[in-house]
Image 1 (tube, rainbow, N blue to C red):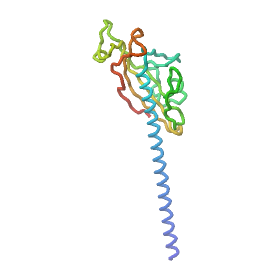
Image 2 (tube, rainbow, N blue to C red):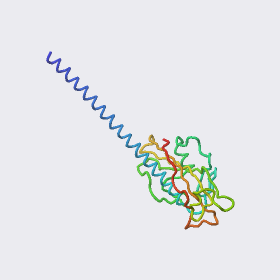
Image 3 (cartoon, one colour):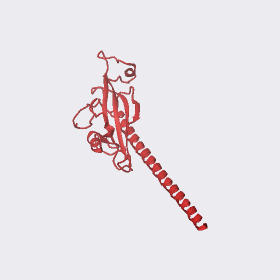
Image 4 (cartoon, rainbow, N blue to C red):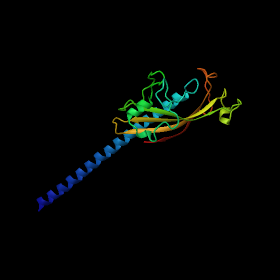
Amino acid sequence: MVLLLCLLFLTALTLLGLSASADAVLQNQLAANLQESERTKQAALAALSWAEDWLLDLQGPAPESCTTPCEGFRLHPAGDLPPHPEFEDLSWWQTQGYEAGVDPLTGNRLVTIGASSIDPPMWVIEVLHERPAAGDGTTDSPIDALADPPADIQAWYHILARASGQTDSVISVVESIVTRSWLSAEESSDESTGSAGKGRVSWRELR
C-alpha cells in the first residue's frame, strides 16, 4: 500500500510538473509573439513617418499622379489603389510603392528602417484631393491664407506603410492622411514651398 501510494503521489507530481512546464512554454510563446508584433508595428510606423516627412519636405511644384509606372516619383490618383491594400503581398508593394529610407527620386539610401525585418518596410502614396486657389488670385479658405507666399494648391494624401517581422508570418500595415500646400511651377524654388496646413491629419492601424 505504501509503495502504491508513493507511485500515485509521484504520478501526480509529474503531471503537475508537465502542466506547469507546458504553461510556461505557452506563456513564452505568447510573449515572443507579442514582442514580434509590437516590433513589426513600430517598423511600420517608422516607415510611415519617414514617408510623411519625405513628402512634406519635398521641394518644387506638386507632383503629378499617374496610374502606370512613372519616371521619377509615382503618385497614385484617387481610387487607383485596391480596396484592401493591407492584404496585398510584398511584390505588389514593391511594384506600386517604395522602400522606406530610400529616396524614390534618386534611389539613394538615406537611413535604414526595420533592420531586423525579413522584408524591407515599404510605403505607397495616393493623392485624395487637391484644391486650387480661387481664380481671382485670392485664397478660398483661411488655411490657404496662412501660406507665405500664398499657396496655389492645397492637397491631401493617403500614405500606407507595410513592415514585416523576423518572419513573413507577422505583417503590420498602417495608414495616415497628410495635407500640405504647393506653389505653382513659376513661384516655387528649391528654397521655398507653401507651408499652409502642413502635417498629419489622422492615422490608423489596418493590420
